[in-house]
Image (cartoon, rainbow, N blue to C red; front, side, top):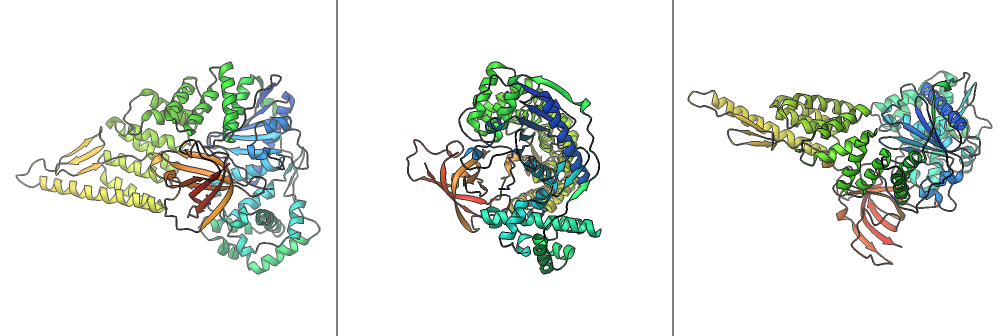
Length: 636
């Protein structure tokens, strides 16, 4: 089964604890772009680091504009056998009949993990890793790139074979070819429009056709471009980047789609497939690698962090407890425990653990960010030099992490001596994430606090051009109307002040303690900054979309402040990908139980992970999720 296996930030789960093998010996190899940890040997670690550096070099030759320098290191756990892999891989792969993983790419905000079995067999043991690394490099284009081309490119590159003196690219998959010959193809006018909510992406048989056909179309177009000296794939991508819809762009770049469909059918039926050969060695200077044996506690702290992102919370806790018992000053163990407590909704405990990690000189930018953000409080009134220091350290560790700039700007907002610096921080946050409406609203607040009304209005008008969702548009329009009305009131007061016999009518007073601007006519404007929690992660639209029902195990259950619930419904053993769902206010979900009586009121944040359920949901405009949850019927 070919599925994008990307595990994002903020996941939690439960299973049995996994202890440490006292005989394990771990080695760390640091190359320029990777950190390899292996329980095999120093020699094997060097070989793997060298192979991954070659992989990176090849992919950057192929995609020179792609970037993997997002402040997130790539950590490779090169595991000696199946047992070591099973101790860390997602629980769903441990079920009977599931595929034996040879590799797994896991993406998170502050790091990226690659799990790799050193005893894996097959012609392309790195296929899963190469597939996901392609997605990782193309992540900035995923907003406008259609799903067929995104997956087609990943399938195209996953069989890359990096040898000592040459590189083989685009090798055909015999399984894909055979499957396509035995099954009916998806019409191209349908394939081009498939998105994350489409049954062609979610249903097992249709999903298999979708992946295989996406590969075949990408392979054919890429080979033909190389043979004819054309750039049709690039032309297509350029049209998409200009907001052209997928079908119209294809007609312009590839010509008549009926003829393209006939060409694809012929292409799939041919006896042999071409591939690309890069006749050049990819040298790597292994003498620059830093190699050392590392304590078992350091290796276990990293393994525990992997288990957290793989939803195996109980395993992670058991391992963290052991690490802290043997090494009470292990910074990563404190970070991971802080993350777990944050996921459980215990913000004070999370702040404590993150604070300990900061004291231990944590090198995690997120540990510094979360500690400072939690210490700052909801109203931002706390004044503590450690808060400023932690935000500054976060920015130093990851200069491209926009939330830190925005949070520090909100922290400085109440200090008149820091108002200019706050505005500079706002600009940096907006530059890094221009589509984030909260950053633009906060920039307007800083300008208002400095009584720069015209500049604040200009910032809000710029925000209105960026706003996409109904709630973002409404937020910007409401603030803009408020500021314009207030500006008119101030101008009227100042005009009256200029008239003979009238004094001090237009006085404007800014109270930085309450973040309120008051004019002498009594009108007030409250300058409340927007924190990341102010805006729902997903649309708040009414549940009017088509309704669906899905049955399976509840996975990836996660709560965000104040009451956002996200989860996935996994149909284990079916080959069908999990269905991702959400509700911005889980208190609106109708929960019930059919064959058992809960001992207490159900807390969806902590009580439903791993349970069987029938979930009803409604489709929404955000296609990154299947829909919003309406009801959950639990069973055991």
